[in-house]
Image (tube, rainbow, N blue to C red):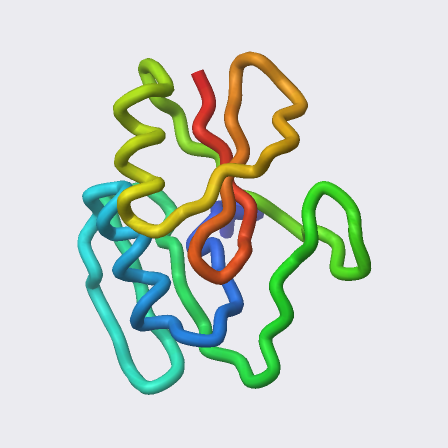
Length: 119
């Protein structure tokens, strides 16, 4: 018996899981492997899945400050900023005005979850 613990999934709450999974599929190139009325799964090889769960009364986080704190965010590695930034903005992301570092840029997905492109 093993006491190993591995990440299986990262789950994002959202108001429309079909729309949000398509955003992340577009920016990552990963495959949508499952969708139903309340759940959707994005997969790439042996990496942990990113899942999207539809919830009622979704409230987006406010970042960097505000009444609804960020509880997590996703970091994506990029080789440079210009082309990936154009890609995520074209897919529906917004870039935060406040950028706290030089080796990463912070964006919001279409429902407000912060994510970073990191060099």
